[in-house]
Structure formats: C-alpha cells, structure tokens
Image: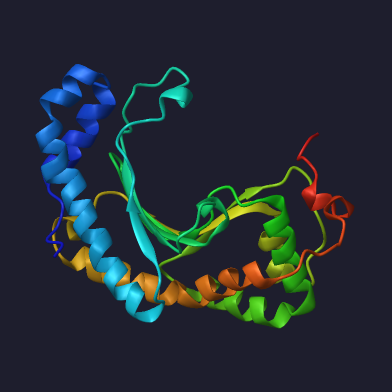
Length: 236
C-alpha cells in the first residue's frame, strides 16, 4: 500500500541530475530503490487495482532509471525522473491510450495520452470526430469545465483538416496530445492521499480512455493510406 514519497525522494532526483554518472548512482542505489522506485511501484499497483476493477486486462509498468545507451545524445546514463504507466498489453504501446504518473525534481504530473501515436491513428481520430462531432464536443466541454485537467498538444506545422466546429480545433491541430495535470511538489506527495487524488482523476478520464480505445476498431479513413495527407511526413 502506497504511504507516500519523502523529501529524500527529491534529494535523490536532484542528486542524480547534478551527479549523473555511474559512481554516484552506485553509491546511492539503495536510496533510489527505497525512496523512489519502491514507492512508485506501490503507487502504480494501487492505481492498477483501482482501474483494473473498472477496465479489466490493464497492466502497469514502472520506467527504468537507466537511459537507453543508444540514445544518450550527450546526456548522462541515468534519468532524473521516473514514471509509471497503466495500459493494455501491447507490443506497440505507443499507439495505445495510456494512464500515467510522473515525478521529476520540479514536481509531478499525471493524466492520459499517447506517446508518439502514428499519423494513421490521428487520422482515424479526426475521421471519427467528422462522423460524430457531438460526442467529442460533449467530452471537450466536460474537459474544459474541469479544474484538474487541461489538453496539451504537440501540433502539426500545418493543419491536416478543418474541424466541424471551433470547439474541436485542438484535436485537429495536434499530432499527439495528453490530457494532463501538473504541479510543483505538494504536500500530498508525502502521504497516501496522493493515491486517492490519482484514482479520482483517472476515474474522470475513463470516458476519454474508452473513446480513444475504440479507435482500434475504426477503419482507416481511406483504403489507400497515402491518400490522406495525415499519413505523410510532417515536412516544411
């Protein structure tokens, strides 16, 4: 059962950011496991149990502290943040709607989104909205009224198509998106109330998860994928 992170959690996160090398990490490896990894795993397990009762078949993952050695790009070998994700089992998890929580030296965030969805998936999303704009308008108004979550998008350089209404415009300009909440370090990180906050937020996000999950059953908007400009490379 999750009982909270601690000030030591943030001491470690700042420490690994400022001392990102193997020797420092090995000296603090037990601290990493005790104050960061194990509480994160406990929080992930509690959230998975809650969501699994509502949407069976989900699994959870806790990220590794080690960076991919092939993608260091001049950075140190360790991440200075850690997260968990809850999603359906899949070899291609980048194309599945995913619940997540992340902790960084600066604070924390959680929500629902995709990690690098394919252009084909985003084209299916727009095609579904075109066929039934009312459902997404209802979901968007509900999101806009929320005091907990906002829609964050990474946008195309050029819009792929025009939305049925101005309300739906953010879904058409984004090549990826996250429905998210973020905060600096807050007191609830240090106690079990954080788990309750996440469970309440994930419950709010379930209708969005169901909407995006249904895209798996959607047909591509064109029999020839290249006929839709969303399938083409995003080039100037």
